[in-house]
Image (cartoon, rainbow over all chains, first blue to last red; front, side):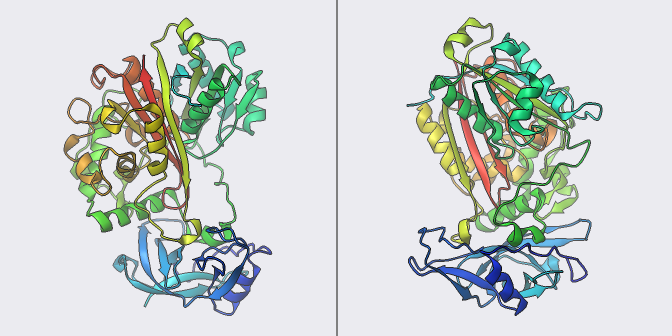
Length: 129
Length: 382
């Protein structure tokens, strides 16, 4: 999907509001558990690994690499590339690769976060570095 | 406590339709229920347990009322296409525990006639919905990573479709009956890299039903005795994005549980029904179940190894979801039905496995590359 695509605004709830407040400022947050030390995505209040409630917000570098992807050749809004990025901070997340030649994507390729506007909070996408 | 040998598959029915614009979904559920009862030699009044999933209009309460059932046990677990493989395990548990004695499981719907309702969503919604995950591209991501790590090729994946097509040519109800070649598959249009159109299953209206019962009741009926001897189920998701690995499914957990309960190994299996929403689904599950080692699935499925009469592991001898039927975009039900046909000796003579006394029916449901469930059922002919 390209920048002409209209993306759905996140619904936002009390648990995820800090994440979406941060995207307005162009920041990608992950949650890290101070009990077990693990970062996770998408954010939970209670750590999905050790079940501690000692989780804190952490700003991600927004940098990572492509774990896998698939180029959907046709859709109502044209071709788009879905995939997973593994962030430098550890967690992998589902996203789309944008603002690039989607036929040239490769597993292991370095990418960085880029935000796309919606009628609500901006959404994180990734583009090759 | 085990379900081993406690539950028998007394009735099976696969709706012959693949396109049913003139019927309601509830009606299709009733028709498949009637068909399975007739196959078993039982009547509606005999049913005291009922199982249905997300395809059942209005859920379990509406269905029990619509069908006119009077049940003392029910379960509406929904894990997508493998729901019915989960239901079979749960029905066996209920029968083993005495909670019911004759259970009905139904599946029906009409995705070929009209669009399906959207998938249920959870806490992940805001973090995934915008990225356009469909079955095609999510299974495509699994295939892409599998190729990257293990050198699996499109030609190897194509062999899975080729094998299914060899079987479908003998099934008069199959939606696609033409035998295809590896070249046909890899030359078909790319849908979502690296999956071609012929790597994808059919979209069909229809349904199926099962009757599961106790040993005593099964022995009073006329059909060959087919029983459950092992079951396992599991769920896998990105789980916070730690150590993401799309090259294996929840079958790595459901499979060993089922084999252990059954007291058999993959080498003992004579026939395998393996969920084939896409070719990659089959390849990953064969590895996960232990039919070959992780990463060797490509070599395992190549050169006709899944073709009945030719290969070492005959699979989906009805033509599977790739060629015959994938009612309601949920393939678990037809996997069980063809396994029972094989165990009864009722498969088409051209694809019937000789002396087939041990079979596996296995599937995943949901989205393989995001979050999904798996269920493994091991069935034995007495």
